[in-house]
Amino acid sequence: MRQVPILAAVPGERLFRLHAAEPEGYEWVPATTWVQAVTLIRTRPIEMAVVDPMLAGEPRSVEIARLRQHFPSLPLVVYTALAPETAGALLDLGRAGIRRVLFHRFDDAPAALRRALLAELEQSASQRLMQQLSGALPELPEALREALEVTLHAPGDGPTVSALAERAQLKRRTCERWFARLGLPSPKMVMLLARVLYAHRLLLDPGYTVEDVALKLGYARAKTLQMHFREVFGLTAGEVRLSLSPDEAMRFIADRYLHQPKQAAS
Image (cartoon, rainbow, N blue to C red; front, side, top):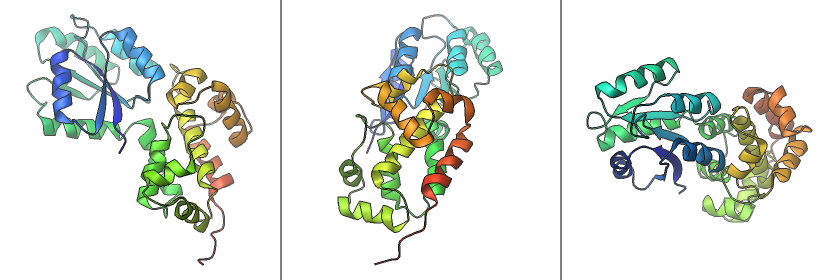
């Protein structure tokens, strides 16, 4: 089971509470400065950020508002103290469109934290993509869809079918038969399509470059990601970024690759 990487730009006491709330499901990636937070978001497979306006010792909202501006697909949860000194910063963040706020010692019991994190994670780029893919691949077993989600962040320029089958606890041949039976491209091609779609969603955020996204997705070279965009769309990553919305990219791939006749059952 993959641990979901979450940025924690919060003081130590709040980081301890986050660890206690969900010790197994999440990988907490601490940031002690806003510069470090931006670097981690650009280079690590961060799925969400939990942030505190008091990170630098005094209430500041501008850095968090910039995170929302540059990385709008990244879910943000503000986790701070309910105190007079944070009121102004919270008002500014509300104007910036940030709505999810948790207050230390008031609504951060473990169960409440877990609910808030899960609700916000549903808005992440990878979860939204998997919701769309689940619609395009409705008959694929749940274990295979979950394994496919893990490959979005898999290291290396091309996740292997053997690794996909192992994550789904299937034999490789059984995995391949499932895809063939449903009239889908090979598992290797479906994994490539999922990663390219995910890369496209990230590239719509103004804070990411192609190099950043390649690094986040585990590609050894940005050139390989560009090659995959050309293979799938016939365009560079930059051209797809400018010409297609996420829904349009999904429709293109569904029409070209996923809507194929099914094989007769053997």
